[in-house]
Length: 341
Image 1 (cartoon, rainbow, N blue to C red):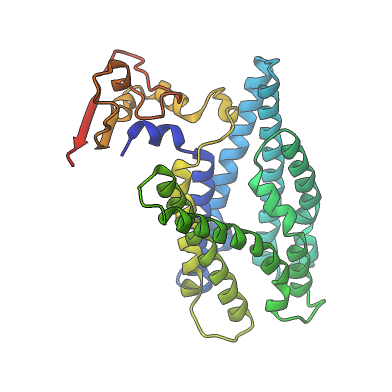
Image 2 (cartoon, rainbow, N blue to C red; image 1 turned 45 degrees about the vertical axis):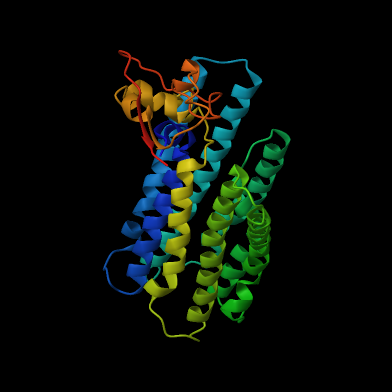
């Protein structure tokens, strides 16, 4: 375990997103099984917290940017990316509010599901434009890509709920099956890549990397597909299973994504006006964490034991080019625990 790598590679944005979705999936499955008697407003609480972080962080970041403008093109690009994310999350929040209104107040004031899904219909072309902008500016926009690729699914679900179409839910989910082909192909690519590296007689770092990627993609894609298939059969009344059993593969998928976010890197530096990566901002607020960040537990590196004093500092192995954990109050000693062969 390398404390420095854990600090540097953590992606707090993805961790908040996946942890919120994980809690929401648990609450929703309990709600559908009548295990909890909560209204949908309470079931969506994890999503409210997620959107609250985004909105507050975006407002604080915008104020910070206006007070201290930076002419650096990269800084402007990151600020625009933050504004795009803030706009998309605001539209999603509006959709969630309409969804709660439709479910909780529908017996009194009924309106069409098509009206409830209007924010998503408006958001999909905006997400396409955001993806084009991200491609031109070398920005990764995963959520925007997911929204833009599922526009047909949103339309079919709204028409099905309004009884405009009488298709089975398996047919309604056809756009979703098509979209899931892409991550399935990527998962197979990483599996083949891992098998090819395992045929090499010597152990290399590429073998470990390929195995990690293959495992993560399989733990994400297979449970996701299983959840979608079980949900379609459940909605068509073809199987008799509790919603908790149906949502269990989704829980596994989201937990895997939440775990992988600890090594996902990335993130926008303008959230909450940090102007730096999350690791640096966290250590400035809590300097005592530098002690943990300087701890390394693992096998002894033969290169670092050659007597080179520079290699025994905060950087470990080949990661000396990364951010170096620093002591902000006073210098702390480096603690290194080597596991013998």
